[in-house]
Length: 458
Ligand SMILES: [Zn+2]
Ligand SMILES: [Zn+2]
Image (cartoon, rainbow, N blue to C red; front, side, top):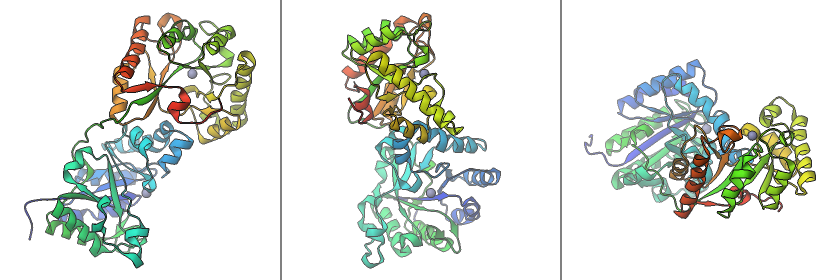
């Protein structure tokens, strides 16, 4: 019997590189009026994209699962979120866009995520698929089999969907010791309590591997859902996600790149009258050049309590140098600049500001060997052609960002520097907007190491 009244939602999600079999399973989904969400990983060639396009056009949802299947939290910590997006996500997004798919969803590789990855990747995706906390050890242990229906973390009320960015799923496959009848009991619980139940698996075929679902199981799950009136929906049918209601102020630091003379003449007084400290990133080869700080002026910034960061000797992209195998040059760019700054100011720098944000794990390793902590917290460039500061802050908070580095290069057109503010007044408005946001409790301006939650020797 088919129930006309739907209660509960079942989300079936499939990860990795099984698009051929996903496509073959299309008639099964169609037979039951069900939609699923597919998260391909790796490089997507023409054949893959053709399959994924068919799935998309049949009404299923297609998301991203990263290029290299690398754990996001570790990458964010050891390299940076910006680089994760650049290396793991953007290539997949571009490939999918070429066949008309705008992937709005992300399945975390190995289901590993944390608050920082959620916040930063919320700029890229509407919803995430991860695990729900039920592991082989509890529900799945064959000796100690508890019904999935007893794990509340595997379910949430349908009414909470607009506030659920992270969809926690239960694994289906031999590896997870799945009891298919018990999974079907989970579907029934979702129906009875009008809840969302999320499953994840990989391949769909007659004789699946350990982490995959047999076509028979899929049939059984879909038939159960139909019998008890549970709607089987893809992520794109789940409606919008409400902006997060931020819990506390976002920590913000203020960084000034490329030793512009205006940083001392204009920016420092604006910081000081508000009791803030700035980070001033110095390229040693540029000291004393036109519109640039002299060593006397850098020393003046130090005297006034600001932080000086190493911005290398000649401003080359360190990540790109490392990719080309020029690691000795990376070390030289960092260490020579560090030593010059220490010699000229009497203060040993602690932070490495990355030219052009170019970075890699090797650069991070070298920097730390040289006693410097790379500045890898997400940065918002402020200045000409950039979003209004108030909007930048609001957008970041809406996505749940906990920390942000607000970056300025040029302060005003006549003072030089990359993307200067259109006028002195607009730079002052930028600083006022930060003060206003702090006063409103939206942000808190702190030193870089506190913002970044890193330990650097004082
Ligand atoms: Zn995977
Ligand atoms: Zn720079």
